[in-house]
Image 1 (cartoon, helix red, strand yellow):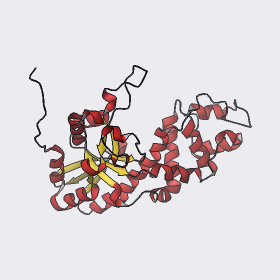
Image 2 (spheres, one colour; image 1 turned 90 degrees about the vertical axis):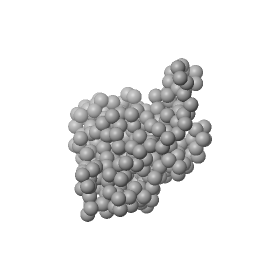
Image 3 (tube, helix red, strand yellow; image 1 turned 120 degrees about the vertical axis):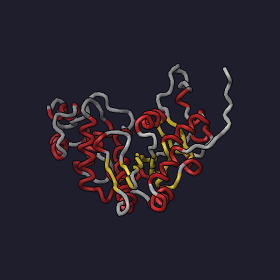
Image 4 (cartoon, one colour; image 1 turned 45 degrees about the vertical axis):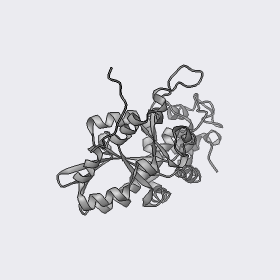
Length: 297
């Protein structure tokens, strides 16, 4: 059963913050430590409690699972033949680089863990649709033109992960609830500390929530943008106003077919092993010629 931090004794909430070394970095933690909220319901009066869970926080956990599993199940198999670079600390578009034969393949690992039930409006089935940010793809190719996205596609992973963490109880479950419902200044740094602590203690079990290796699918940033150019209705946020608001949708994703427009990573891995990095990189830049109607003026 999920913990509701509002019903937890004040001392237990503070102990949970201490356990993950969250001092005054987060404004909500600062308020709790200040004792301004009373002893019975320590977070009941914190302003700006969200009306729905903060998926950006929860997605950090499923994202970390995807990166760890991809590293352990796939990249580890390539290490005898290639050099694997970890770029997480650099904070750029790459998570990993696969280097061999004087060339490097940049990889960004993502997770598709939520079923998009409105996919049919774009001509796709919900089980065959994953979103990729058009803005991120545009920004990526300016610096890393041959970037490859690798998505762990599992529309039940979000549900399994939430259930696992909520069942832990104790300090980690208290903080899971806090971060799920409260944001504010300093939340990002505090969340990072929490996710590190969660995986330090339960990483193996969390990794085991991911499916078999066949669920990783690959698509280049270049192909994502080609889909956008050829079929702009797949990116409705570019031109569809939210009903009754007069404002454009801020969610500007390109919706991609898993079956038709991505490759199984196993196939990419086979090409890497048999033909090398340069051959795979060529697949991200070589193009097909298609007729696209365009006016002369």
